Image 1 (cartoon, helix red, strand yellow):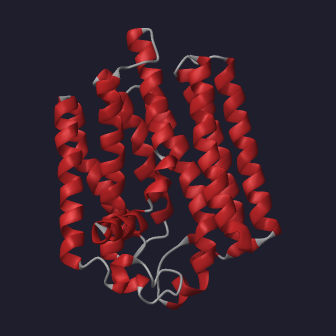
Image 2 (cartoon, rainbow, N blue to C red):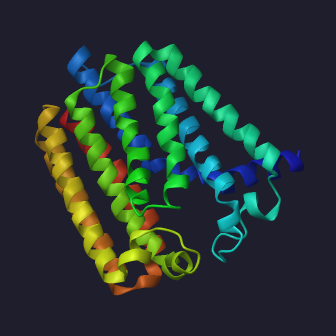
Length: 288
């Protein structure tokens, strides 16, 4: 029993399951918005709730595991990542490959059970999710690829409800993409010297700390603009606009924390962004 518990702990450490909170609120935001438009109610039923969770979790498991698998050669050289289960031998390559394949299969199967569009979109979505690990080896645009990986969640959520890609889901996708890319820039400041030393492409390693802070702020301002456009396209009420502006305030606080004390990047990255997603969902739900 203890061995099984240790395996679960290693898997949790590998994929950092608690960080699913970044994507889940936005897939459900899209689902309640789509349901309100199609069904006249924000509640879309237990079946689609389970489907949404399975899709989000399996897609994220695939993305995180694939990233750890492809980055083993990099992670073992970085003191910050050298103790990951994929590096220190707790999870072997074969088991990691099985985990990646299993989650990809679950994602495609669940998408197949949803509708035809979801099924056909599942393949390019998996390609994007895996692309981040490859992109950062040759382009600093990797931050945006990571953002798109999470940004696809609301499109998937809307497709599950409507069987098509509505405008509001695209705008929400773009908002999430710039939000994630913006905070990933701040997080990447921790590895600026390592990336330069090992020839990895990131905006911090290419353009420096000050430029990174500026670009991150631009990305986050762009995210708020797209979120406001999402509220307009989704026909949402005043509560949604209030929530979006509050989320903008959280992003301002995030930048102030990092500028004031570089050592508190983890606090800005995990705590504030976790609250932001939940706050966004709650206010959109209230507006519906």
